Image (cartoon, rainbow, N blue to C red):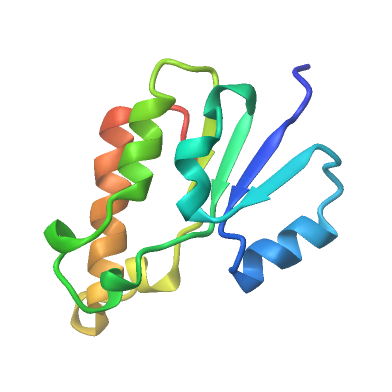
Length: 119
């Protein structure tokens, strides 16, 4: 079995920090999304992205920073599993969908086309 080397994106995220502190995985790096260009993503077995663009709450998906899409393109042909936590807003009933939920669902559909190893 391959040894897990996990990269967590979202250094300012409360959930990311809790995961980092409570995880039984020993080989974890945590970074902010601004640091993504300085990291060799290929050295990780898993990438867990807790980061999001605040524009996802107020703007159409076309006007947001597509960090997930960028990461998936960089690891497309690598043996790296990309983990994107979902939200109840994505799967709530259509009459209660927020712009964030709509955008998050579009992100999921976008990255599944690029990267097959996604959770």
